[in-house]
Length: 46
Image (cartoon, rainbow, N blue to C red; front, top):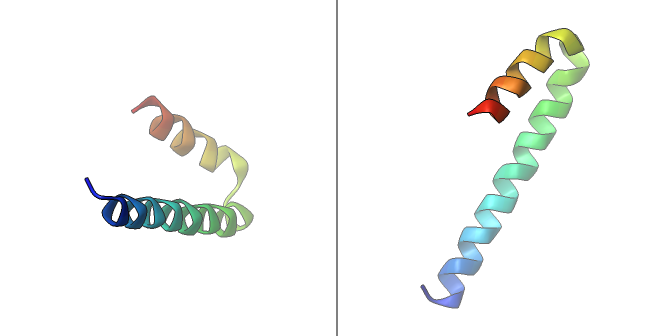
């Protein structure tokens, strides 16, 4: 793998994690913590 391709891949991963964190934070304000915990534990379990 060349450096530009690996750099672009890392950038995409960082952007994906950043967008997911914003999505989770925005929905955490709407949904109760009890409804979020099972989803987080199921994602971590996989």
